[in-house]
Image (cartoon, rainbow over all chains, first blue to last red; front, side, top):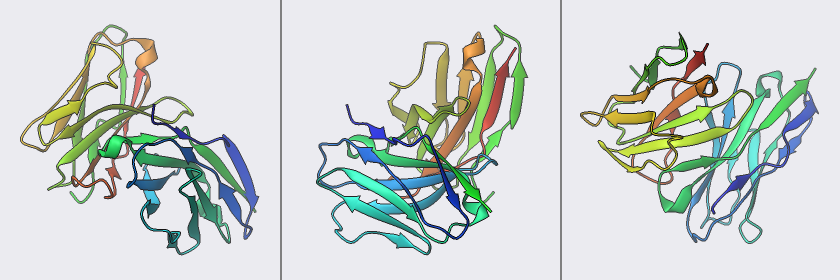
Length: 114
Length: 114
């Protein structure tokens, strides 16, 4: 079965510090995409960052970056200079079987302490 | 509208009643997804549409759940004879038909079965 695993149900970080959220996945595909979505208390899921598997360079979006290890099937999210507004649930996602059926991990609740 | 719209935002229903949840995707998006999110949990895939057809209905929890999409646009998720375990947030998302494209989410419908 193709799955997405987030092993950290909860994480906390001090404001302005850096935190890394982990994600592993299982696939037999060679070319695919990976996503991190953020869900604040408003429930609105928002795309944070995406990674194309055939690209070796890690994706970066401002304070957000990924550490993509294709061989290890690992896709971690690093948040630098954490801000109070970063507090949310973070979900790792993967289009299963090369289709558009997005499969999500169980999420990591991030708390940012002032 | 500019985003994915779901209605109602909240729905309280009595056990045994039928409910209909509506999703208006972003215009032009050919893919549409339904997910269920129980309290504090990840997103459980229910069904997705490619145009008006549903290639994968494997996530529907039981035959009490059904969904349709008409005109390649609006989708309705129907739950018949609701049970208390159906209580959850139902999220809809839409995207272009491309594995790497971003899925845009609505704010969800919170269903409470009493």
